Amino acid sequence: MRYLLFSSCVVLLISCTSAYKLLQATEGDAGSLQKFKPAFSVALYKAEVEVMDNRLSGLLLVKKMPDSSMRLVFSNEIGFKFFDFEFSNNGKFKVYSIIKQMNKKPVIKTLRKDFELIMMNGIGNKNVQIRKDDGLLYFSFKQSKGYYHYITSISGEELIRAERASKRKSVMEAVMKNYTNGIPDSIGITHKNFNFTIGLKRIIR
Amino acid sequence: MRRLIIILTLCVTCNSLHAQYPGYAPVADLAKFKTEFSAATKKTLTIKSDFVQEKTLSMLSEKIVSKGKFWFKKDNMVRMEYKQPFQYLMIINKDKVFVKDGQNENKVSARSNKLFQQVNKIMIDCMQGSTLSNTDFKTRIFENKNSYLVELVPVVKGLKELFKNINVVVDKKDYAAGSIEMWEISGDNTIIRFTNKELNTTIQDALFTF
Image (cartoon, rainbow over all chains, first blue to last red; front, side, top):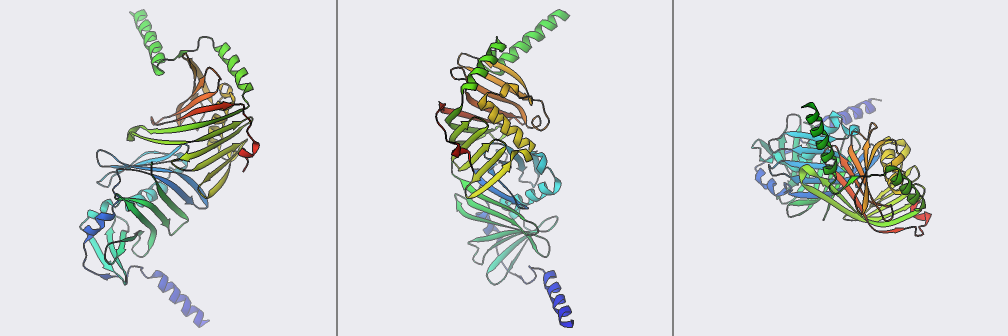
C-alpha cells in the first residue's frame, strides 16, 4: 500500500513536471527560422480533418493578398465553403465567413492559433528564448497565453516540428515537410488534449 | 410628376431584370415551358457526361477548377467522380450519400443532415426536371435562343443564409441541364458545366452502389 502511494506520487510529480524544464539556454540565431516560414503566394491543399471521430475532407486555399495579409478559405470538394479567415501581418485576425456549425468561439480561437503557428508571422519578434536538449534547438516565443515553440535540428538546417504549448506542456504539434519554392508540400496538425487533427497535402494545379 | 416617377421606376426595374442575365429575357409562355420541360425530362432516364466545376472566390480573385465524370439515373441516383486536380467520389443513391476521398470512405445519411438533404435535392431536381416543383425556392424562368435559365431563389431557412440564388441553364434541344450555378450571399459562386452529354444510354445500377 505504501509502495502504491509512493509510486502514485512519483507519477503525479512526473506528470506535473514541465516538458521544457530540462532544456538548457544556448546561443543561437532566430533568423535561421526565416527559411522555414512558408512563402505562400497562393497554394491549394487537399485537407483532411478529424474531430472527435468525425471526418471531414475538403480544399484549403491559402493566398497572400496585395496588402500582405493572408487569406485562408476552406471548402469541401463540391464548392461548399466552411470558413474564410484573414490573418494580417500585424497579428490582426478577421472572420469573413464561417458556417453555423463551426461558428463557436473555441473553434475559431483554436483554428486561429493553429494557423498562426504554421504561418510563423511572429518569428521576427526579438523576444525569443533559445534553448537546447541533446539533439534539438528550441526557439520559444511567448504569446499572450502560452508559447509558440519552433524546434529545429541542432544545426538549424531542419525544422523538426512546431508546438503550441502552455508553460508546462505541448497542446498541439505541427509538422511542415518537403518545401518546394518555399511552400511546404505537407502540413500536419495534431492536438494533444483532444482528438483533432488536420492533414494538408498540396495540390499542384 | 408622380406618374413620371412610376414610369421611370418601372423602366429601371424592367431594365435591371433584363440586365441581370445578359442575352436572356423572361419566358413569354410559362405554361408552355412547364409542359414541355416536364414532358422532356420524363423521357430522360439516364445522363452521362463530363463536367468542369469552377469555384470563384470573388474577394480573393481566385478560381478553383476541377474536372471529372458525371452519371445520373432515375430515380434519385447521381455519381460524381472528380479526377483533376484531386480524386474525389460522391454517390447519391436515394437518401444516402457516399463519399470517398483518397483511401477514406464515408457514408452519410442525407436524412441526418438537413442541409445536405436540401443540396442533394437540388442536384437531383436539376437532373430529373423536378426543379420547378421544389417549394424550397421561388422560381423565375428566362430564355435566349439556345437555352432556358431557371432561377431558383431560396425561401427556406438554411438555404437562404447560404445561397442568393441557384441558376440552372437548360439546353433547349434536350431540356437537360447544361450548367448549374450556385451564387453565394458572399458573392462567391460555383459553376458546374456539363459537356459531352449522352442521354438515355445504359448505365448499370452498380455505379451507384457502395
